[in-house]
Length: 243
Length: 194
Image (cartoon, rainbow over all chains, first blue to last red; front, side):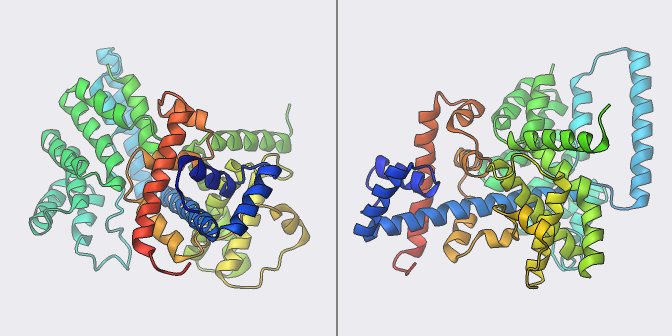
């Protein structure tokens, strides 16, 4: 007995997920004993659910690891971050005092833009041999022009590498070249790489916001807002704040 | 005026409630709150390297998350930190492949709870292959399968979150996603003995 109908698929799903009542369970297990094919389908279904859980468990673990990478790494960077925050607060206060303007879309970009963490070639001893190590080091150090030049070179050898395109897009955006960045993000989105799709939409929306294409930016953020995740939540927030 | 214990209990319950609703930021908050303490503690008590302790703690947070969303951890009899340490301790011991000697308090606390390394979530090649397929499956399957099987959302909640007309639409879509995965797995494993 194979998956031959929606009702059967549903039953297997309910059995494996432990959603059957006692009566239904007894009858189903009896059928499993009588039909080896059904038992095999149940086994396969269980493996699929375990595999799905494993995938999302790894993804959650990766989120925790990334949250460490976003934190200042040393006391010096911590001091720099504090100093930058103080300057930002003073700057924001002065801007508000002199202009008495409500938050505009340019402020929104500044508030939400931060470079995507380096997960392409994390700077560790084991990753120092990576061909991307130098360029990603420039990226992490905020040397975006150097990083862009490096990405251009790497992309001339690997034009189909969407990760490189994505990081070049982020570098272009950070270096104030939002127009050029949109094209990189759009190419990444068109490639439908599930790992890069949400981040690419997020940075495409920010690029459009930076350029002043607010309608396009809203449409872009709206595409990823319904799903779960840090960038999806941020997209939801920015979508509501865009004027 | 609340005592410290009462205050911690209330904060823990709020955190559990946010996590149960699928708020990833609360999971990260919990992780960052106890990470340094646990890593130091594990280094002192088990003489493990920092990266081993950190890796075990990340696994412990994932396990705690699963225990919360599956309803295995509903009402707390100790602080969330105590649960997290008990789970983390078990994981460190498993990673070190030491016999898992637990004291009675830990055993009682971990009863029915998931407390294993994330790598052990998959027990065979077919499961690991499905996990790899999941990185290619795309939307809306990614979100539907995550919300249902990992965040334990109801069909009704998923319909609301994803702006579907009703839960039946979600059910049908979910079954389609599973069938797609199953066909891909069959293509890879056909003829092999499971």
